[in-house]
Length: 383
Image (spheres, rainbow, N blue to C red):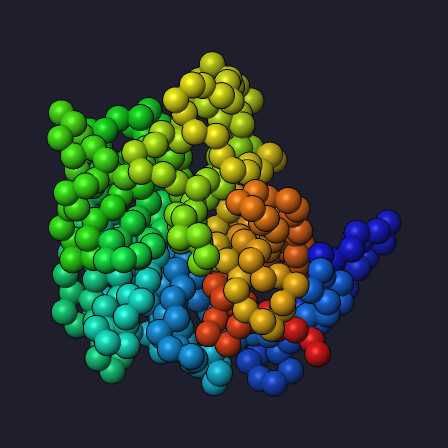
């Protein structure tokens, strides 16, 4: 973590000035900034590409090819991280890009090199009503082909807020998250809609017969877990195979959860935050029997973005850590995990004041971050 001192404001201004001068100034061999003090030693932050205004989703296709969604334009870009160039794909399904909506998460199938499938989450509809759709497609050259819709979230709603959305694939099943649409928090406790839920379908879009609420009167068959507010992180632990999730709280109470089949994670009955007007959420409780506690919570809120576990050797001190982008508090968050518990937290890149939307480990063992304003950057050890 960049160390704090009484001269922090001056230091921050200098670093931000250098960052603007060097990183925003262009894309060449000099587009990097050095970070002197982190728990993994000296680091370099390198600019890969720019001008992707809200880079929401990221997924690697091969050693140097990265797909990135731009939420407000609905675009998907193919980025060559070695050459520092990007190309907008043609034929991407159109999105209702308003508010929190647009082109959201994107995920390559684990066997992408064999089957070519890409999973794509985006908002559809119009200003009168909109929702989330999950699709999959393939890429030929610079064009999207063979588009299939796998799921449509119900109900449609007339406000463009809290779509979530992240996806995770494991063992032939696709898990994806949906927010509570902000104005409908109580919907997260109802089995009769998809809002405030994690869903589980087969990778071809069919519903597994062993989903937890199959046969429950009035329940939607795709639901895996309930009681979520606005999930922006979802992935499987690389060692334990557990499904991890993060979600935005209101004013405080952002959560990291380990999800289990059929469990209720409490929103809006229990919460560690308060409402934006300072009033309690519900009756202001943090625990209730039958409702799951978060593994970890952030109060005040950091506004978590995408997340990834680090398993590389380039920065071996971080092996096993969970990295989360932070939008409101503008940093890269590192949680050290031991025996399934968070034992420490480190806040990286704070002085650069970037809204970090997503983070992924690349095939090269380095970390790649997406920052609002347009940048895809790579964190490497400064050896």
